[in-house]
Length: 141
Image: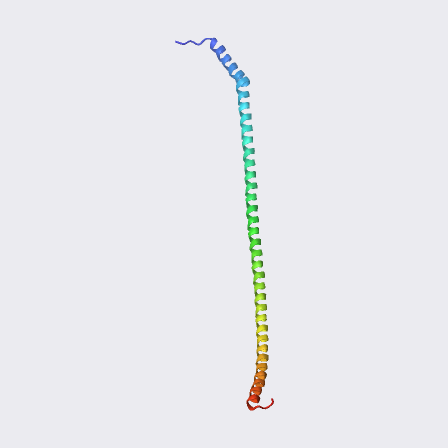
């Protein structure tokens, strides 16, 4: 059987001393180093996450700016195109009116010339008829 003598107290004292000494000299510094490493790793990771969020936000704003600028460009392009179509329609309308006016003037000129030619042909026909009548009747005209 096991008997307890005074050496057990010495073994307990040595054990407690070693626990205290190892805790003080080995385990606490090791735990402190691990905690510092964890803090630095977590800090760098958190900083990296903040950086990623910041750059993601910048990227989203950049994309939104590009989209808005593109939409503004399309809107301006459509506005310029509509203005060009409007100016073209106005010029075509003006050209159409000018052509109609020229046609009306030409018709009026042709009608005037036709009347003048008709009157002149009427006079010439009368003169020719008188000449023919005079030659048939042998009278001076």
